[in-house]
Image 1: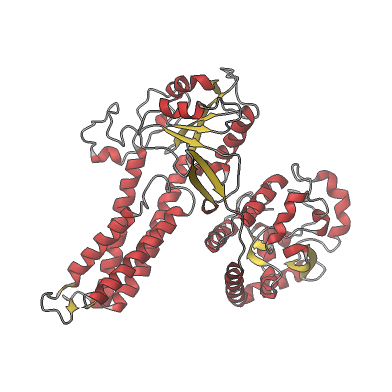
Image 2: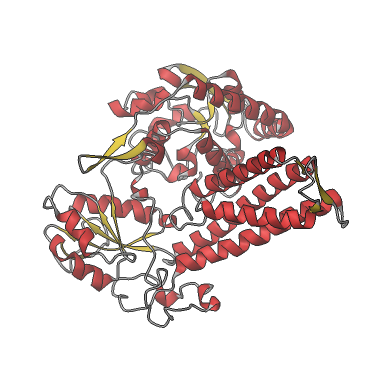
Length: 531
């Protein structure tokens, strides 16, 4: 569990969302126009805004999703009907049961849309706990859609109703694709607002200064997660001070949490550590929170562990957290290898002309070969020869010692330099858009690399690894990975290791697909993170 995922629930519903009186909003009925009004800039969460009314953004956002889902599904299902049957009044045929009469596809399509909406609601795909961050929202949409169509096929078979197969085969992928696209667009909208401090949970951190600082930095690094840190309560409780290394104000001691909540209008209390707290303090904190409006979450010290590996199991009244060890079964490795082979082979064929064009560009713009071959360390510490388009001058390795004093700060193992003089003109362009790494598709086909995995290190880098970093070799290195989509060249060595180890510990096929999609977006629009 990453520290920016301290709980799957950003916060419980606000008072307005649970029907409690909210200043300026009727408890009996909320006008629909108010539900579609987002927080204004004056309502951005800032310490001291305790008495400002808060728009029930969770409910408003869920209603936006509901209407958008309805529009998308109506368009997809009825569009499929028109494509398959035209404007005629086609009938759903009933076989061998006189008690059932044929009915129009116009009615069947309406029922399918309503059932689809019901399935999406039943699986909580619009719940504020899953929107805005992670893959759970998309996974639930896929599960609800596949489950609905599977159930439809079973019911149709049992009651001998002839539903056109082509109609269903078009409606499912079309509706599912449009749903995922619609939710992705809404997520971009939500992330943009969260960057401005809107549509977020107001978090009060409780714990030791070190743990508070660690969690605060992670939450501030990922504003898209929807947690806005507004203050902290520590054992010492030096009011008017700040947590060392951060700008988080100290709102008091752990004995004045209720006053801190009132002063900051926090709706979420996150306990970052319990070492310095009295034994029953966490329970007392939960008793002081307002039911239905304020929420308590625990941020365990374990980080970079994915949700599926964590299970809470009550034992003798104790909520024990069980963390499963990483598993790399033969089936998982076969599935990953099959995906690597299919995508890399198809990709190499499709971009063949581009590879030829880049090779010619390298040869014509600088002296030396088009390809650069370098020994890297892969699965199990085995060495292999990695391919890249040459982006530097031929004697780049010889020039390296003279540039070591000019390396970027924060990278004691990797050599990174913002304006490396060894990079050629065409090389700078290729590096920015990751085009120099395309020949690694052949490393994937050969089995030395994977499409997604940890960064392939040099021998000189491995010699400087500490013991825990060698866990990167549990999986094949990748053309792209969590480090590629998490900051690329702007990452420090510690952050690069953290992202790689988190990937190794929590690998999944779905995660690989997500990273590939993010890589495509990062390659098209790299910003300032690549050089």
